[in-house]
Length: 186
Image (cartoon, rainbow, N blue to C red; front, side, top):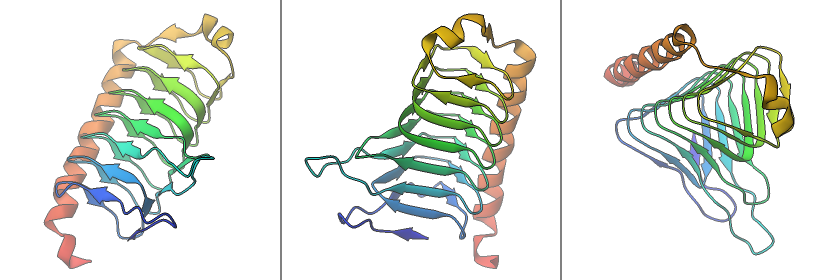
């Protein structure tokens, strides 16, 4: 479902993107080329700042927002998901937040008030809040990162981890094509 927010903003979805009919996109949301938005995802930009303004939620080209993901912004803050990134099942991305290009966010992870640099991987059930994860970092499953100091022991992404992330993105890009082909069969 694509709907306006109380301020009148309506999502803008590129023609090549696929949004599952059960997903909800509300307000100042921009979905770029070849994006996959899975079942029951909620992407909602509807809160304004003290001046009545809001930054958009932008989903970059060739990214995928999987089943049950929630993306929202607090008090007009924005969320930017870079190109070729994967936000896995049931994750929460709460703005203000920036996720770089070719990033993988694992199942049930939570991002809030943070930046995740290009090529980084945040594995399943992790929390990243109030810090800046540099490009190419690997946050292991169940990690709790709440400051830049928490990142001191974090390792770099290895080629095998990077390959897994790329395969997830590729699989979801193929789903865009497949679902768009059968869209009238729902």
